[in-house]
Length: 113
Image (cartoon, rainbow, N blue to C red; front, side):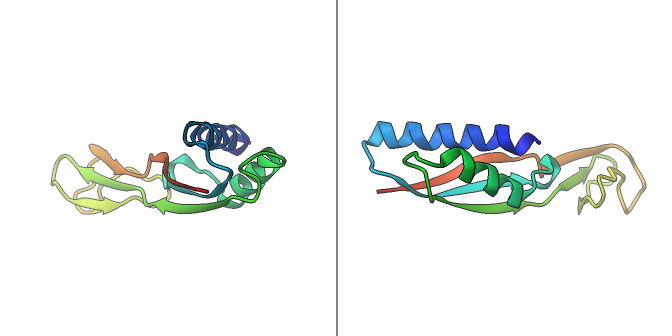
């Protein structure tokens, strides 16, 4: 379950922010998670809640925004949504595809008090 390791990284970022700004607690954490990461949002929320128990991040809400997997065909230059991890251009059939989005895994914002 890679969600536990990801949750641990998010918690570390949150707690470092609390310490840096001398905040009392974390209210919410905005995450941008690309479809290609295959992170299961509910599993991530569960792992985070377990790890955050008893810390300044206990009870913080994870606001998850899923970023779609989008490719760009190098041959015909069309941008398209990638379904089922099929990296083939739907217009020309080329396998020369560049990933434009969908690999993101970052903290977009933190709300503390």
